[in-house]
Amino acid sequence: MSKRAVLEVIALDARDAVAAQAGGADRLEVVTDIAADGLTPPVPAFAAIRAAVDLDLRVMLRLSDGFAAGDAGDVGRLVRAAGELRAAGADQFVLGFLDAEGGVDLAAVERVVAELDGCAWTFHRAIDHTADRDALRKQCEGLPGLDTYLTAGAAAGVDDGLAVLIAEAGRHGEQGYEQQLLVGGGTRLDHVPALRAAGIDAFHIGGAARPSGWAGPVSAGAVGEWRRVLDGE
View 1: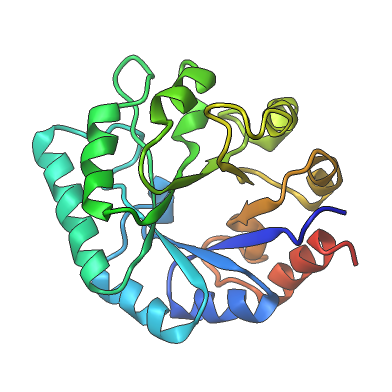
View 2: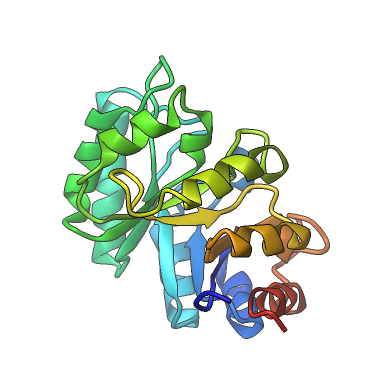
């Protein structure tokens, strides 16, 4: 078995965060408005989570549903939000923007990343909706702080993307493929053996941590079950 896998759990509030930590999560993705697939949380919500747990927190930088950054004014709002969150103690982030043709909106990404000043960040599932995954990776190569791609391998989720994930794991270390693959998007426990066998060592769960659905909180027990499976227990 390869090294201990990272388990990242989506947290909407401090209650979620405490349960995720109790269950064995390594890191939280902090968002609001899950109906829009996760948007930038208000600073007080982030601060409450930061005060509640000592886990690494990756904070979403996304103002609206979809993967477009918007116009210059919208990008400016993203930059201001990033600055406010950094001032409140955030030091890891999640972002990713596509243009109208489905390619990476490199200008918007670069402008936001410049505000992060070297902070670690994840390029999120926008990669699953791009016209050319390989091109996106190569265009993002060298962006300061980019250390992770959150991906299901396909827009529809891991069931459809499993072969892509395994193939990309096999390219780890090549140009554009140095970053950690964080698998998320319809991930189930039965996907884990094949992904671990391929060398994938980071997993992201949202709904899977909430037995009563998104209206209910994170369950420490559900997170603990993932932790045990990832640890090979």
